[in-house]
Amino acid sequence: MNKSLQEWRTLLGSAFPSGDNPYWRALPISRMKGLLLGTFFISAVVGFAADLLLINSHWLGRGFFWPALFGSAAVGILVAKVKRVRPIFLAAFVFVSTCTTIWVVVGLSGLGWSGLHWLTDSISLAVYRWPIPQTMKARLLFDSIGVWVCGVLGFRLLLSFVTNEGLANVRMQTELSLAHGIQARLVPDISLETSRFEVYGRSIPSTEMGGDLIDLIESDDGGLLVYVADISGHGLPAGQLMGMLKAALRVSLQFHQQPSALLQSADRVLPIVKEEDMYATLALLQFDGSAQAEYASAGHLPILHYRPHSGDTTRISVAQLPLGLIPGGPYASQRVSYSTGDMFLLFTDGITEVVNHADEEFGLARLEQLLNKHAVQPLSQIWEVITAEVRQHGPQKDDQTLLLLRVRQ
Image (cartoon, rainbow, N blue to C red):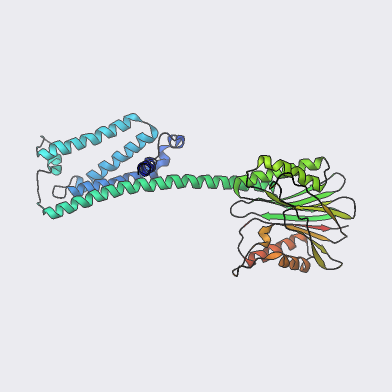
């Protein structure tokens, strides 16, 4: 019981902006107009409730005195609390206290001061200008107190919700903006044409940033390495791990490591810098001066290899654990022959796992059919055709990444 009461006290206590918060202290009054007006009108409800209690007396200020009094006092107290301006707080407190004292002492006594009959007579509970039945008076008293309590409590709860959830929303939007900025820098569009290769790749981020990563690295001897990776999780942690993985692979490649050694190096580095439940899947393809390409994968979907001479597509993969999942595991690579015109497609599960209204996944088979059908087209057009078919199949739920590579000679 005490714990519940403490939680309610904490919730209500955090409702109003406070001078303890540097944001509110630094916020100019001119930018608090909406908050101050809202505070005034909500607090004015209490004034109208007070006016109802005095229904059998003359109106004071045509019924606007009490709403204006309570509204102005609430605004003054709020400004004094946020800005820590003690003179304003004391002035508001003295003003409210003085009016209350006049109402209780002078009003209840039925006395009037010289020149102030317009005030004391109007608020006096002893002068009944228009007698009303006791039952109506009791009902007015009940309704007035109910309006007062519900108005104040509702305002505090509403402001508490907006403050807390608004802060959470700002943090989420800030994190999302930073994450998309990281992704834009780490995962730029890839478009490369050399005498030996043609490469095109793009990643379409989901609404909440995922961790798809594509990269292309050229070596001084004319070699080429491309890979696609998928980081588990979303948001800034995924973006940070993307950057670490990309840096680890590029640094390792400076020492001319083979694909299997690249994966082993990344698998040793990631556990130190990642969160416990995070990992990365990856598919990698490396070309040197020979007629064979070396490929490796770590828990990733297979690479599709299209051969125009036979018109078929094969799936090449090495069954191995994702990077960082179980540190210290061995990684191996394999080689595949290729010839002029061959095409390789690397992708992430954001493509194949898109489901339609019948809960059917897009799947590898559809991807292979599209690759076979449009293989002669430019790579950018193939990318557009595939992504259009995926969008038509179902809504995007995850990052969608495609990287195409065609051998020219």
